Image (cartoon, rainbow, N blue to C red; front, side, top):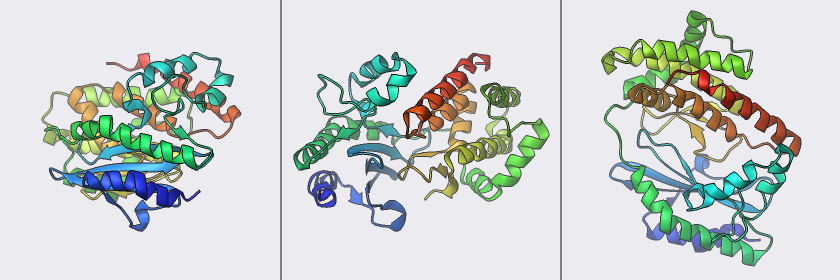
Length: 313
Protein backbone atom coordinates (compact mmCIF):
# COMPACT_ATOMS: atom_id res chain seq x y z
CA UNK A 1 0.00 0.00 0.00
CA UNK A 2 1.33 3.45 -0.91
CA UNK A 3 0.52 4.91 2.47
CA UNK A 4 2.76 7.99 2.15
CA UNK A 5 1.08 9.21 -1.04
CA UNK A 6 -2.39 8.55 0.34
CA UNK A 7 -1.51 10.35 3.59
CA UNK A 8 -0.47 13.48 1.67
CA UNK A 9 -3.55 13.29 -0.57
CA UNK A 10 -5.94 13.09 2.39
CA UNK A 11 -4.71 14.18 5.83
CA UNK A 12 -1.81 16.21 4.45
CA UNK A 13 -3.91 18.31 2.09
CA UNK A 14 -6.63 18.77 4.70
CA UNK A 15 -4.23 19.99 7.40
CA UNK A 16 -2.32 22.22 4.99
CA UNK A 17 -5.62 23.94 4.24
CA UNK A 18 -5.87 24.63 7.99
CA UNK A 19 -2.42 26.24 8.04
CA UNK A 20 -0.38 23.21 9.17
CA UNK A 21 2.94 22.19 7.65
CA UNK A 22 4.44 18.73 7.47
CA UNK A 23 7.69 18.70 9.46
CA UNK A 24 10.51 17.19 7.43
CA UNK A 25 13.39 17.47 9.92
CA UNK A 26 14.91 14.14 10.90
CA UNK A 27 13.61 14.35 14.47
CA UNK A 28 10.03 14.59 13.20
CA UNK A 29 10.03 11.98 10.46
CA UNK A 30 9.85 8.22 10.30
CA UNK A 31 8.69 5.45 8.06
CA UNK A 32 5.21 5.58 9.59
CA UNK A 33 4.98 8.96 11.37
CA UNK A 34 3.69 12.28 10.02
CA UNK A 35 4.01 15.38 12.20
CA UNK A 36 2.10 18.54 11.23
CA UNK A 37 2.53 21.86 13.09
CA UNK A 38 1.29 25.44 12.92
CA UNK A 39 1.56 28.61 15.02
CA UNK A 40 -1.52 29.85 16.85
CA UNK A 41 -1.06 33.10 18.82
CA UNK A 42 2.63 32.29 19.38
CA UNK A 43 1.73 28.74 20.51
CA UNK A 44 2.87 25.74 18.46
CA UNK A 45 0.08 23.28 17.75
CA UNK A 46 0.99 19.75 16.64
CA UNK A 47 -0.94 16.85 15.15
CA UNK A 48 0.93 13.57 14.75
CA UNK A 49 -0.49 10.71 12.73
CA UNK A 50 1.18 7.34 13.15
CA UNK A 51 0.88 3.80 11.90
CA UNK A 52 0.98 1.02 14.48
CA UNK A 53 4.25 -0.90 14.66
CA UNK A 54 2.40 -4.15 15.28
CA UNK A 55 -0.50 -4.26 12.80
CA UNK A 56 -2.30 -2.19 10.15
CA UNK A 57 -3.81 0.68 12.10
CA UNK A 58 -3.64 4.48 12.20
CA UNK A 59 -4.13 6.86 15.10
CA UNK A 60 -3.24 10.45 15.95
CA UNK A 61 -2.39 12.62 18.94
CA UNK A 62 -2.51 16.39 19.37
CA UNK A 63 -0.36 18.61 21.55
CA UNK A 64 0.56 22.25 22.05
CA UNK A 65 3.55 23.83 23.78
CA UNK A 66 1.23 25.94 25.93
CA UNK A 67 1.95 25.31 29.57
CA UNK A 68 -0.63 23.35 31.53
CA UNK A 69 -1.80 21.21 28.62
CA UNK A 70 -1.01 17.57 27.97
CA UNK A 71 -1.73 15.66 24.76
CA UNK A 72 -5.08 14.48 23.39
CA UNK A 73 -5.47 11.10 21.70
CA UNK A 74 -7.74 10.46 18.74
CA UNK A 75 -10.35 8.18 20.28
CA UNK A 76 -10.79 10.24 23.42
CA UNK A 77 -12.06 13.19 21.39
CA UNK A 78 -15.13 11.27 20.25
CA UNK A 79 -18.48 11.46 22.05
CA UNK A 80 -19.37 8.06 23.47
CA UNK A 81 -15.87 6.60 23.18
CA UNK A 82 -15.16 6.48 26.91
CA UNK A 83 -18.49 4.79 27.60
CA UNK A 84 -17.64 2.06 25.08
CA UNK A 85 -14.15 1.73 26.52
CA UNK A 86 -15.49 0.98 29.99
CA UNK A 87 -17.37 -2.04 28.62
CA UNK A 88 -14.17 -3.97 27.88
CA UNK A 89 -12.41 -2.73 31.00
CA UNK A 90 -14.94 -4.76 32.97
CA UNK A 91 -13.90 -7.97 31.22
CA UNK A 92 -11.52 -10.52 32.78
CA UNK A 93 -7.92 -9.35 32.42
CA UNK A 94 -7.06 -12.13 29.97
CA UNK A 95 -9.66 -10.91 27.45
CA UNK A 96 -8.85 -7.20 27.48
CA UNK A 97 -5.80 -7.43 25.18
CA UNK A 98 -7.63 -9.22 22.36
CA UNK A 99 -10.93 -7.36 22.71
CA UNK A 100 -9.32 -3.91 22.76
CA UNK A 101 -8.05 -4.35 19.20
CA UNK A 102 -11.47 -5.23 17.80
CA UNK A 103 -13.62 -2.56 16.06
CA UNK A 104 -16.22 -0.89 18.25
CA UNK A 105 -19.64 -2.14 17.07
CA UNK A 106 -22.30 0.36 15.98
CA UNK A 107 -19.96 3.34 16.34
CA UNK A 108 -19.88 6.34 13.95
CA UNK A 109 -16.21 5.73 13.10
CA UNK A 110 -14.35 2.53 12.20
CA UNK A 111 -12.05 2.49 15.22
CA UNK A 112 -11.13 -0.02 17.90
CA UNK A 113 -11.10 0.41 21.68
CA UNK A 114 -7.54 1.79 21.49
CA UNK A 115 -8.73 4.67 19.31
CA UNK A 116 -7.08 3.21 16.18
CA UNK A 117 -8.43 2.93 12.65
CA UNK A 118 -7.84 -0.64 11.44
CA UNK A 119 -7.46 -1.45 7.74
CA UNK A 120 -6.72 -4.51 5.58
CA UNK A 121 -6.76 -3.04 2.09
CA UNK A 122 -6.42 0.19 0.07
CA UNK A 123 -10.09 1.09 0.38
CA UNK A 124 -10.12 0.72 4.16
CA UNK A 125 -6.82 2.63 4.44
CA UNK A 126 -8.19 5.62 2.54
CA UNK A 127 -11.44 5.48 4.51
CA UNK A 128 -9.43 5.59 7.74
CA UNK A 129 -7.54 8.66 6.56
CA UNK A 130 -10.69 10.53 5.58
CA UNK A 131 -12.29 9.65 8.92
CA UNK A 132 -9.23 11.06 10.70
CA UNK A 133 -9.75 14.31 8.76
CA UNK A 134 -13.41 14.33 9.80
CA UNK A 135 -12.60 13.80 13.49
CA UNK A 136 -9.99 16.57 13.44
CA UNK A 137 -12.40 18.94 11.70
CA UNK A 138 -15.33 18.25 14.03
CA UNK A 139 -13.53 17.83 17.36
CA UNK A 140 -9.77 18.17 17.09
CA UNK A 141 -9.36 21.79 15.98
CA UNK A 142 -11.65 23.03 18.73
CA UNK A 143 -9.72 20.98 21.31
CA UNK A 144 -6.42 22.37 20.00
CA UNK A 145 -7.73 25.89 20.48
CA UNK A 146 -8.67 25.05 24.08
CA UNK A 147 -5.19 23.60 24.62
CA UNK A 148 -3.50 26.77 23.32
CA UNK A 149 -4.10 29.09 26.27
CA UNK A 150 -1.56 29.37 29.08
CA UNK A 151 -2.12 29.89 32.76
CA UNK A 152 -0.45 32.57 34.88
CA UNK A 153 1.77 30.50 37.19
CA UNK A 154 4.07 28.70 34.75
CA UNK A 155 7.58 27.22 34.76
CA UNK A 156 10.18 29.85 33.91
CA UNK A 157 12.94 29.47 31.33
CA UNK A 158 15.43 29.57 34.21
CA UNK A 159 13.70 26.63 35.90
CA UNK A 160 13.70 24.67 32.64
CA UNK A 161 17.38 25.34 31.97
CA UNK A 162 18.36 24.35 35.52
CA UNK A 163 16.37 21.12 35.24
CA UNK A 164 17.81 20.20 31.84
CA UNK A 165 21.44 20.90 32.75
CA UNK A 166 21.39 19.40 36.28
CA UNK A 167 18.70 16.71 36.37
CA UNK A 168 21.09 13.93 37.44
CA UNK A 169 22.55 15.96 40.32
CA UNK A 170 19.16 17.24 41.42
CA UNK A 171 17.57 13.79 41.30
CA UNK A 172 20.42 12.25 43.30
CA UNK A 173 20.15 15.10 45.81
CA UNK A 174 16.42 14.49 46.23
CA UNK A 175 16.92 10.72 46.68
CA UNK A 176 19.71 11.18 49.22
CA UNK A 177 18.06 13.92 51.27
CA UNK A 178 14.74 12.08 51.50
CA UNK A 179 16.07 8.50 51.68
CA UNK A 180 14.05 7.41 48.67
CA UNK A 181 14.15 3.75 47.63
CA UNK A 182 14.35 3.78 43.83
CA UNK A 183 15.37 0.17 43.23
CA UNK A 184 12.08 -1.16 44.61
CA UNK A 185 9.28 -0.51 42.08
CA UNK A 186 6.50 -2.12 44.10
CA UNK A 187 3.27 -0.14 44.35
CA UNK A 188 3.82 0.30 48.09
CA UNK A 189 7.28 1.78 47.59
CA UNK A 190 6.14 4.08 44.81
CA UNK A 191 3.32 5.30 47.04
CA UNK A 192 6.01 6.18 49.58
CA UNK A 193 7.65 8.39 46.92
CA UNK A 194 4.48 10.39 46.51
CA UNK A 195 3.79 10.56 50.23
CA UNK A 196 7.24 12.11 50.66
CA UNK A 197 6.59 14.55 47.82
CA UNK A 198 3.22 15.41 49.37
CA UNK A 199 4.84 16.20 52.71
CA UNK A 200 7.46 18.41 51.06
CA UNK A 201 4.99 20.33 48.91
CA UNK A 202 2.44 20.73 51.71
CA UNK A 203 5.03 22.70 53.69
CA UNK A 204 5.47 25.26 50.90
CA UNK A 205 1.93 25.61 49.52
CA UNK A 206 1.55 29.03 51.16
CA UNK A 207 5.00 30.28 50.18
CA UNK A 208 5.54 32.75 47.31
CA UNK A 209 6.08 30.94 44.01
CA UNK A 210 9.52 32.46 43.48
CA UNK A 211 10.71 31.01 46.80
CA UNK A 212 9.72 27.40 46.02
CA UNK A 213 10.98 27.12 42.45
CA UNK A 214 14.20 25.30 43.42
CA UNK A 215 12.19 22.74 45.41
CA UNK A 216 9.82 22.16 42.50
CA UNK A 217 12.70 21.72 40.05
CA UNK A 218 14.30 19.12 42.34
CA UNK A 219 11.05 17.14 42.54
CA UNK A 220 10.69 17.37 38.75
CA UNK A 221 14.22 16.03 38.30
CA UNK A 222 13.47 13.02 40.49
CA UNK A 223 10.16 12.17 38.77
CA UNK A 224 11.64 12.78 35.34
CA UNK A 225 14.48 10.36 35.97
CA UNK A 226 12.07 7.64 37.11
CA UNK A 227 9.84 8.06 34.05
CA UNK A 228 12.92 8.13 31.82
CA UNK A 229 13.92 4.71 33.11
CA UNK A 230 10.41 3.33 32.69
CA UNK A 231 10.10 4.59 29.11
CA UNK A 232 13.73 3.96 28.20
CA UNK A 233 13.69 7.57 27.12
CA UNK A 234 15.89 10.63 27.30
CA UNK A 235 15.74 14.26 28.43
CA UNK A 236 14.98 16.75 25.66
CA UNK A 237 14.95 20.55 25.81
CA UNK A 238 11.98 21.91 23.87
CA UNK A 239 11.92 24.81 21.46
CA UNK A 240 11.09 27.01 24.45
CA UNK A 241 13.58 26.55 27.29
CA UNK A 242 10.98 25.89 29.97
CA UNK A 243 9.56 22.92 28.03
CA UNK A 244 11.62 19.97 29.26
CA UNK A 245 10.49 16.59 27.96
CA UNK A 246 11.14 12.96 28.69
CA UNK A 247 10.74 11.51 25.22
CA UNK A 248 9.74 7.85 24.92
CA UNK A 249 12.23 6.39 22.45
CA UNK A 250 9.85 3.52 21.70
CA UNK A 251 6.86 5.73 20.91
CA UNK A 252 6.22 8.18 18.13
CA UNK A 253 7.25 11.82 18.47
CA UNK A 254 5.52 14.01 21.05
CA UNK A 255 4.27 11.19 23.26
CA UNK A 256 6.30 12.48 26.15
CA UNK A 257 6.30 13.52 29.79
CA UNK A 258 6.81 17.09 31.04
CA UNK A 259 7.92 16.70 34.67
CA UNK A 260 8.31 20.40 35.41
CA UNK A 261 4.86 21.17 34.04
CA UNK A 262 3.31 18.42 36.15
CA UNK A 263 5.00 19.51 39.38
CA UNK A 264 4.14 23.21 38.96
CA UNK A 265 0.55 22.29 38.09
CA UNK A 266 0.27 20.15 41.22
CA UNK A 267 1.72 22.99 43.33
CA UNK A 268 -0.67 25.53 41.89
CA UNK A 269 -3.76 23.37 42.37
CA UNK A 270 -2.55 21.91 45.68
CA UNK A 271 -3.27 18.46 44.31
CA UNK A 272 -0.20 16.30 44.78
CA UNK A 273 -2.17 13.22 43.74
CA UNK A 274 -2.03 14.61 40.19
CA UNK A 275 1.64 13.61 40.08
CA UNK A 276 0.88 9.96 40.75
CA UNK A 277 -2.01 10.01 38.28
CA UNK A 278 0.41 11.34 35.65
CA UNK A 279 2.95 8.67 36.56
CA UNK A 280 0.33 5.97 35.96
CA UNK A 281 -0.72 7.64 32.71
CA UNK A 282 2.84 7.54 31.45
CA UNK A 283 3.11 3.86 32.32
CA UNK A 284 -0.08 3.34 30.32
CA UNK A 285 1.73 4.67 27.24
CA UNK A 286 4.00 1.62 27.35
CA UNK A 287 1.81 -0.68 25.27
CA UNK A 288 2.47 -4.36 26.04
CA UNK A 289 3.06 -6.55 22.99
CA UNK A 290 1.64 -9.89 24.20
CA UNK A 291 -1.38 -10.99 26.16
CA UNK A 292 0.86 -12.13 29.01
CA UNK A 293 2.50 -8.69 29.14
CA UNK A 294 -0.95 -7.07 29.04
CA UNK A 295 -2.11 -9.11 32.04
CA UNK A 296 1.03 -8.34 34.04
CA UNK A 297 0.86 -4.68 33.03
CA UNK A 298 -2.83 -4.36 34.01
CA UNK A 299 -2.19 -6.00 37.38
CA UNK A 300 0.68 -3.58 38.01
CA UNK A 301 -1.45 -0.53 37.17
CA UNK A 302 -4.31 -1.83 39.33
CA UNK A 303 -1.88 -2.23 42.21
CA UNK A 304 -0.68 1.37 41.80
CA UNK A 305 -4.22 2.70 41.65
CA UNK A 306 -5.23 0.85 44.82
CA UNK A 307 -2.50 2.78 46.64
CA UNK A 308 -3.77 6.20 45.50
CA UNK A 309 -6.01 6.71 48.52
CA UNK A 310 -2.89 6.86 50.68
CA UNK A 311 -1.90 10.18 49.14
CA UNK A 312 -3.25 13.29 50.91
CA UNK A 313 -5.53 15.41 48.74
